[in-house]
Length: 135
Ligand code: C5P
Image (cartoon, rainbow, N blue to C red; front, side, top):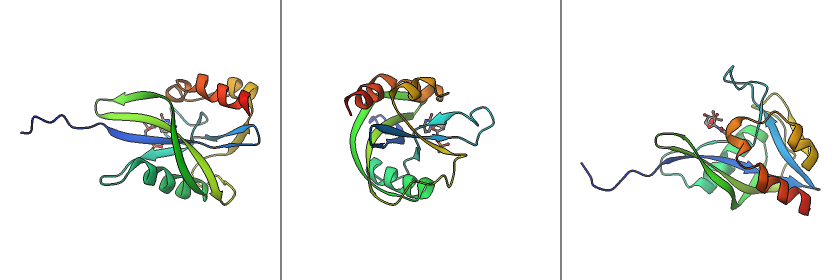
């Protein structure tokens, strides 16, 4: 047994802004979350950095290349040992397509407030709105 506490496993989500809008993706699963909207992303694999994981997830889910930027918003504890964090993601190449989601939407500040976001991602609304309103 080690005395060093294990670090939380991380789930990363990407906030892609363009032209005063934010990219949201509509989930298809699990059934309880299908139809609700999120920042796209997924679990960081063992020995992978959060930045590399975000790039990999967005490549797999949206067919784009992104550069991972700064953290945005609070940590969201998903369960014991699993934490969700949002990062800015800058589009480097490609046009996002929904490979893994039902559909995508580019929303402005007012539209963001009317979207049925998954509960976890609602924690980031203040920072996302602030960013959208500054664009
Ligand atoms: O997308 P995936 O199922 O790999 O995500 C792992 C976990 O993180 C799930 O519990 C999912 O609901 C959660 N998640 C979230 N918000 C996101 C991305 C993932 O709550 N933007």
